[in-house]
Length: 430
Image 1 (cartoon, rainbow, N blue to C red):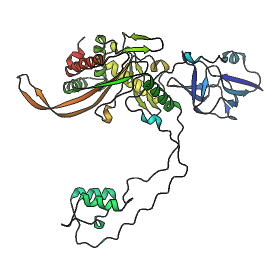
Image 2: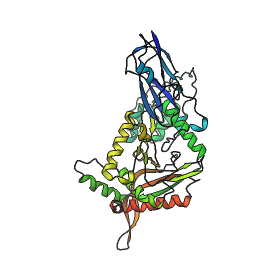
Image 3: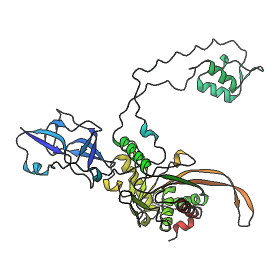
Image 4: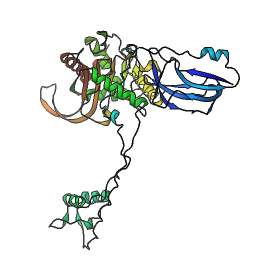
């Protein structure tokens, strides 16, 4: 018998450590060659580790949520006979611990609300017992219960027998009478039972999101700017393109928005930039490597559309779909999660009038389109007459790093972007 030590390999340039996300094997289990035994997460990419030998696991590096430095012991495996020379040569040797200044956390931030990163609260082991609801009074015989259909439907939804509710002086039960009945009979028709507190360890993606967002807000002086855009014509153009798309993917508003952003950025290079605050250097990028915030079961991920400015609408639609699917499936490559120069985050389908998204450090700006709503507004026709029309309106939010981007620059950029969105034919002109 021999012992084989599998050290944590170098799985990405500049990576100093990785987090244990999930063990598939435990001490005492056998493992086969090429069998996955643990998932490690680094820089928001989860990488499965495979065993190079057959054997029994004698020792593991730590519990889920622990960090393992590159080159340090990940697992010790007992093998029969001697460890093959080619396996021994492949095993990475322990590396010296990185200096603090050499380790830089890559910031992947979310689009609007960061509050759920702080939800790991200590639980009360003994929840207070739920008091029994006061029994409802026995129904009083009545010839007929008078109530509107809306009150009757609400009573049915709450499980309330209207015969038990005291009506007003005219004998008709109204919503206020139903409210009064419920206030005196607490727990009657309650929507849900009170649940016990739950304690959940913050590890993996949730911990990385919490750390990254805290670092972004701690280091970057944010400011936000919001403008309303009339996207009626843009939505009409999108409908026309989809009606004649053939076998091409169906367009959402996002490819059109990205194309408009890429056409606007050359006049505002301070928006498409990264700020190295330690070196005191701002790099204004010519290419647009657009981060696209995507919500997954594991948490927020930001895959990057490389060279977005060189892609047409259909290519952007394909890339958006491919990267979003890869992020949700956990198959996105490390290089697809790095190198962004500007991020777009959208909660539009969920509603919301405006957002103040957190910047994806070391980028200096993040753009958030919001919900499209229809409402009447004054429109001046070609005849110069002002009239009221139903229009489709959408707010565009932008958050910027005030160390690099001035308020005037951010506002000017959004106004230029708005002009393109409101005259969408210009988006398709080279």
